[in-house]
Length: 92
Image (tube, rainbow, N blue to C red; front, side, top):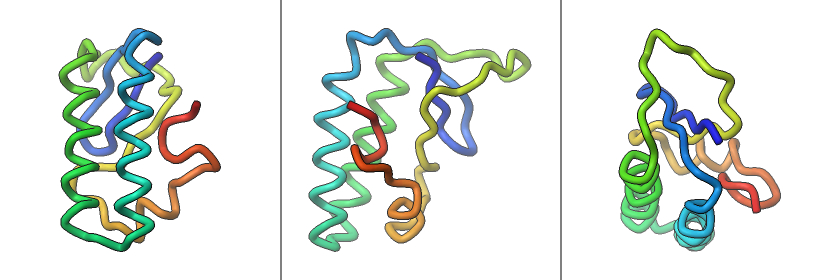
């Protein structure tokens, strides 16, 4: 799956990594529901770091269609709320 982090680029991730990403997404949702800005920042950072760590970067000049788009590291809690689907940011 191709994952885009807004403002950064794209990474290719194997489907086998999605249980970890889903767990981090669940943590992010919990922090957002509580309105804890510090917890939200920490959880968003952990999710984005996992994508960077687990994925293989796609060169900037090789634009691929993204199957999942994640917010930029400096996204606001309100902005991320607007991006949420029924399953959070990461489907599944």
